[in-house]
Length: 115
Length: 115
Image (tube, rainbow over all chains, first blue to last red; front, side):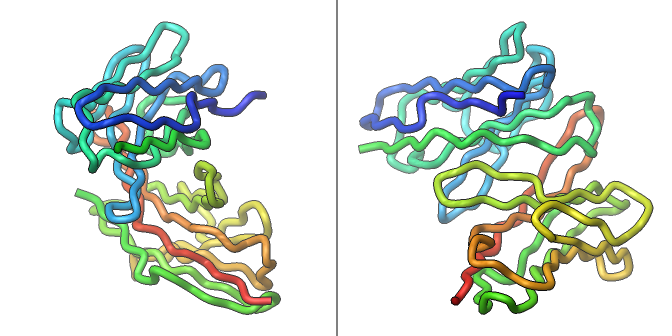
């Protein structure tokens, strides 16, 4: 069974640009969550999608948005990039269902660098 | 709101020595508890999980963790550390709130293994 796939692995952008990251979950998983990981703030929850609906959202500005498609693939978009957006962005999938007992399966992340 | 504390930012052990990584959580009820490991440049991999029942849970790679309700702790242990165990370890709490899954991760503990 293929794992969670994130593309691209690396991205370099400049301030003010926008970026779209992609995540393909494990087959059959309906929940996709996104995290931002930085040395200073650790692993921070961005949002979770389940069946094409955003089910939960972390404390990030509106520049961070996402969506989920009918095949459960998800994209995350960041507009008007800032230097502080440089981070490893991780996607995780689970079978979903709304239970807190769902272990998450993580991709290897997209390393975003802002110049 | 729930929270997770990993008091040790770094832990250094010699290969072959035993290991214990500490995790304390704050939540009104018994949460779902997880330990993940992250190797450099990769995403997080689930080591083990606790939902209910036996408070000593076994995971992959020879790891185990013990849930202690009275101490609100879920410490990770391994009797004999291998050099390949050097990585970042994250404790996490899964909570269901209003139908949404709210994951919270600790800041992580970096394990350094000396030969």
